[in-house]
Length: 154
Length: 299
Picture 1: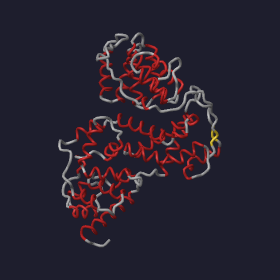
Picture 2 (picture 1 turned 90 degrees about the vertical axis):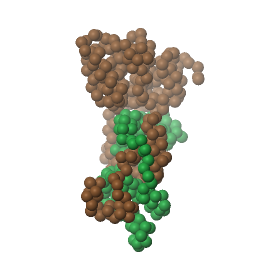
Picture 3 (picture 1 turned 45 degrees about the horizontal axis):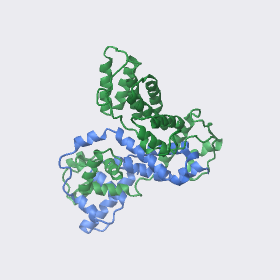
Picture 4 (picture 1 turned 180 degrees about the horizontal axis):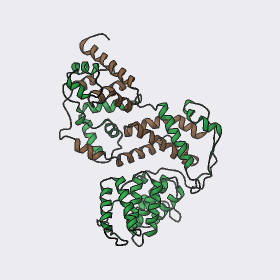
C-alpha cells in the first residue's frame, strides 16, 4: 500500500465521524471527507507526517464551518425559536437521565423519535442505520422501559 | 392507535402508543422548541457562526433532552462510515484528482495502473491497491491555512468603504447591481451569481461587479468560475487600493481551493508586502503555509 492509501485507510472513518459531528448530516459529512482527502492528495508530497491526523481534522473543521456559514440556518432557527426555548422536563428526559441500560444509539433513536417526531426512515438516514435496525433499537428501548417502569420481564 | 398518534408520525407503530402511554406523553413532539439534531451536534463542536453558536449552546445548556441527544450523537459508536459511503467518497476522490489540471501546479499528471483502477473501490476492505503516481512536489508547501477561511468582504458599495459603482452607465445598470448586492447580503448566493452575471454583461468594465460575482461563486463552491471573475476584476481595478486588496485576497482563496498553491502564494506575497487591508492576514497565511515572503524579514 502506498502512503496515501495507508493514510486513507487509517483515518477516513475517523475523519468522517468528526465531520459528521460538525455538520450532523451524513451526506455533507461524506462530501467533507472527500474534500479532506482530495486536499491531502494534493499536499501529500510536502506534508510533514507528524501533522497528521490533526491536519485532516483542521481541514474538515474549516469545511464544516464553511457549510454552516453558507446554510441559511440561522434565520430559520431564530424565527422558529420561542422566547422560552426550554420546555419542562419530560418523562422521557427524566428516564434517559436515570436509566443506565441504554446505549448511545438507543438513546439517539428514542430522542429523535419521541422528542423530534422523526420517522424511522429519517432516523435511519440520520444515524446511518437501516430501517430494521432503528425499529429494533426502539423496540429494545421499549422493553427496557417496561421492565424499569412496570417491573415486566423482557 | 389514536388520531394524535397517526398525525404525529408518518409511520406510526404499535410501540409508539405503548411508549407514549408509559412515559405519560400526550402533547406534540417538542421539535418546535428545540433546535434540530444537527444544530445541537454542531454547537457541541463549536463550528456554528457566532450568534447562532451562542443561541444554540444556551438552549442546550438548559434543555436536558438536547443534552442527552448531543451526548448520544457524540458517542464514537454512532456515526460509522458505511461501506457505501466509503465507496462513494473514493469514487469522488478519484474523479476529482483525475480531472485536476496538472499544468498550473507544475505537477506531472499521475496515472493509474489497471489493477489500481479495478480495485480502487475495495481499498477500505484492505485489498492491495497499486497507484502509479508520478508527480513533482509543488514548490509551495501545502496547507489549508485557517486564515484563508471564506468570509464575506467587510465592505459594501456606498458604505463605509467609500466604494462607488463604476463602469458604463448602462440604463438600469446600477439598479441591477443593487439588487444583486441585496441577494448577496441575504446570503442568497445562487441568486447573487445570477444577478451579478447579468450585471457584468451590462457593465463589462465594472471591476466591482466582477469582484462580487467571483466572491459569490466562491460561496457557491465554484472556485474555478470564481477565478475567471476575480481575474477580470484584477485586470479592471485601477487606483482603488481597497478594492485591489480585496480582489487579490479572494483570488488567493480561489487559487488555494483549486490547488494552485503557487499562484495563491504569489497573491498573498503581494498583499503581505503592501500596506493595506488584508496585509496581516496574508502574512499570517504565508506563515501557515511556511512560505517566507521574498524580501521581507521574518515576523
